[in-house]
Length: 189
Image (cartoon, rainbow, N blue to C red):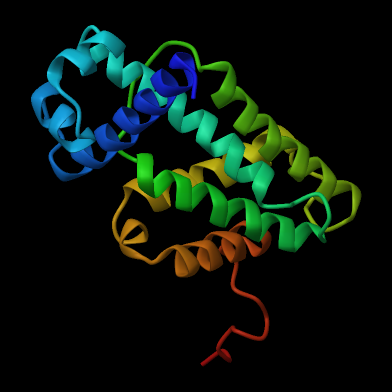
């Protein structure tokens, strides 16, 4: 194994451990993160000069991981509704590992923009196939889908649901809206 491969694996291990440590304790310090990663503080500081540097990279790493799980979900080869379910499940699963990341930067990482673009492309596909409404721009549908996913990662009681229940809730709300269907409506008094 080359030195650069070893450095990359150590960096990834540190970032994953940082996410875990920060989920456990929001203000986990560099010593806590080093211990969680099983590395010395000197090794941690060789990769990340400050806690802020680590948090910024953790945001980028989370976005890269989101793209990886979307690619692995195989959404291109299935019907739109199944693709929505797979994409939502993938983002929730990755997001549950990295939900602590909140960098409040004025601009998104290119990887974060790519996640939004994947949501938009799927919304356009759904519109073309007649699965999603066409009276709302695909960008807004994608933003609403992303907001539902973000809500399930950060807001109780959605964040307290398991991944499958949260996925089902999000996809049903996204596809059907919150409108009561005629079959669910109670008869007038």
